[in-house]
Length: 342
Image (cartoon, rainbow, N blue to C red; front, top):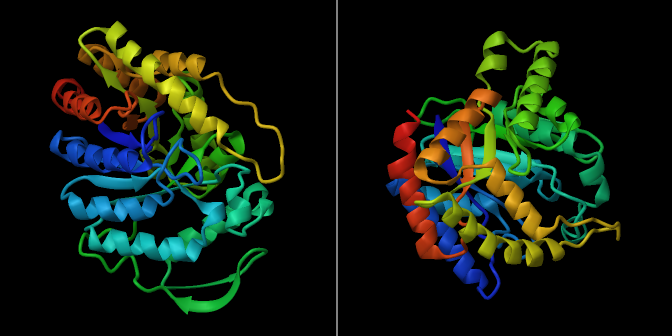
């Protein structure tokens, strides 16, 4: 089982953006010290929900500050990025880190980001498959050209080629954030593992894994690809000597962050977006994920893995909003939970 930290660089009420980013960087350093497998970095624009606007840039910093840790984006928002530019950066990090970089990509939302970056609503509504295919080709082929609806250019050489790395790996893995049957099918047909969100429980995640396998088989993927796909489950982790203390730490801090963060999202076309009740959402997350004593957290992770077939986890450990508490939470995850998992 591979357990990592999911870093949002969340700005809690009363905090500055620099404070949130410092906590994000420090928590990644502590994750390596504590023996975690990976760190996954979120990306958001113009909202305090997450203060990192470029997950791949922060990944570059953290790869330089760590030696063993796998660093991934969760996710780089593809509709607001050029696939070739993102592919070049991913190849660069893959080569220079010795194969420690994972590129997670997602569709994002219908936010004002699409207006600011000039990609438009169509890039979100219909353009994701074209962008994903171009990105994957860039990371797998020696030269690439495009004749699509969004991208049209002559064939050019891929420099640097991801395969030119000393680790021997052909290129960085690409993981796709999946929130619907359509996105599950998109990932499965291309043989790409999924990143499944922290808002869904084990039963729904198991159904999505089963659906992925069905579509992958139908697309002609080998049995080894189908059963060996390394999907990632996002969740929340808060450790305390008593479960009530762990829940209290999250209920005290997370609703305020969720309220100001989610309310700040602005749609590009004025469509109404209903917001989750912050307290109810926090309580839901506490019920779904490893929140409680070390033994309870280990049992919860083992149960999720058994029910879903997923063996990689990206756990939000900064839910208290406090740097010292986050560091302690990560250290306890490494020292008191991981030994029970094998």
